[in-house]
Image (tube, rainbow, N blue to C red):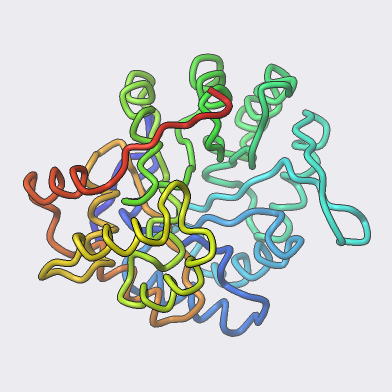
Length: 301
């Protein structure tokens, strides 16, 4: 599988990564999915301490025994869960991040994290303190690089201009093209995008009829159900819709990796197959842009 450089780092990630949030809570199945993804050429795994209150990280750690050196491992911090594990609250403080990373390292059974990401963020945070935490962790060798997971343009711009982030993880797909307004800005700073949700909750797959039924009550983002049906009909072509969706995200080189989730080995194989499909032609790419919306972020600008 092709790999791309992540920002200005020396990390090279597979064009398709594995978003680990969908692995579930059965250890054996989760490990099988991870191993299947790796066998397909995927070298980039993205998890978070919040997923199932650390259980997800523990599954990843167990799955990577004997394979760690071949994997670019990413996780996240900032959502601090309660002792009862019945909820969480936002805590981007330096003290908490430096505590959280040590717990993640234990669960992941590793002594370093390739990409450590702030799992959210607001403009009201003490951003300088948060940056200090990540910089110190990098100097201490506990993390190699850091990034943020955010869809807030004002927060993204603050970190891009004030920190050494190499990536921004954000939802991006054919039906959610809002990140495109940030492409040129991030390119100026040599910051890559990691694209989550590339299949739009399954709407951009062969199973979209079933997904459309679930979306019928509220549509998808600014798309009404009628607009969804019309748009999806126009997107059908000789290539599988899932391949089109993945290749659309990969068309611009600012996207280093696309990280669909997988809740089965079959889905992991299908995701990898889509990454190896033929790239979109310029005509195909322009047609998709003509028939879909270019919404803008209306909040947190």
